[in-house]
Amino acid sequence: MPDDKYTRCPGCSTVFRVTSEQLAMRDGQVRCGHCKSVFDGNVQQVSLAPATPRDEGTPGLDEAAPGPATVTSRDARALEPPDIPAEPVVSAAATEAGEVPREDRFSRPTPARSRRARTAGYLVAVAVLLVLVAAQAAFHFRDGVAAHWPETRPLLVRMCSVAGCTIRPLRDVAMSYLSIDASDLQADPAHRGLLILTATVRNRAAWSLAYPYLELTLTDAQDQVVVRRALAPADYAGGTADVQQGIAPNGEIAVRVFIDASATTQAGYRLYMFYP
Image (cartoon, rainbow, N blue to C red; front, side, top):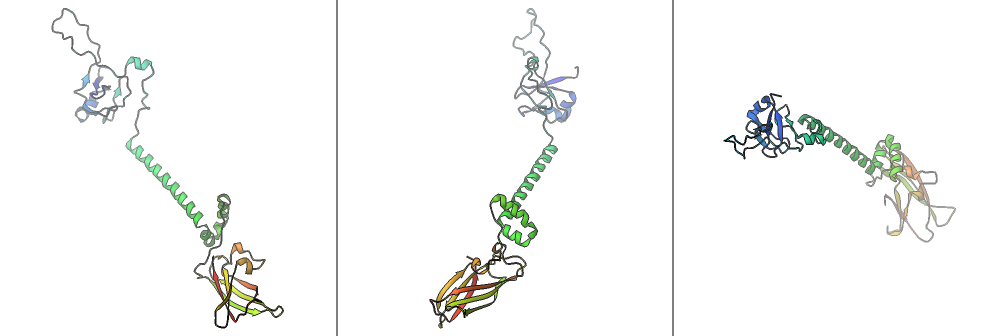
């Protein structure tokens, strides 16, 4: 076409087809899309017209004068920064070999599109991290979650069936909600040397609490320890109690245990609660 002009990158010798409008932008300053070199497109203009055969008798012609520009067959992006991309020119041999790049293959995304893609990627990553953190927190604090939000217990039970864990009642280690409201130790009149321990353990919390262990200490007249025994929940809760469910919210359990004290002499006792 008559308006076609050609300029060659001094860095990688890639030739681009340009227009006068492109060269007029920024005083002809362009950037090669292949090697990123910045050059003056006006100064580096070249002609692709075939050289005129030299007449042997014509004086004044220099044998060293350059011929038409050599066209590279390497791939190249459009010149920058013009909005209208310059079309890279390749050789006919490269075209026949199928090496001519399609325009969409080397088109680069706009900065706005790249920013939107990065923002979307960040949002997805943050959402995934939040889900993972929530799942990890639910796993580690599953007992507390199930106690304070009973409606989540079925979901947590299903999760533990896959993860191989269990949902247990919370432990009141500080004994802030568990208390022994009443206790008594009396000799069994029907069996010599047998003592009967009775007590009431109350849960004043609004959620279930794990059964504590009971420590029974028998003392002599000087309040010195004669014998001490730890009672597990299975020892005092009774056969009908579901120890795994814990003591119900604002509930209480009755303790009744028979103690063989035939080998000891005692004058008093102490009763404490604890978690092993």
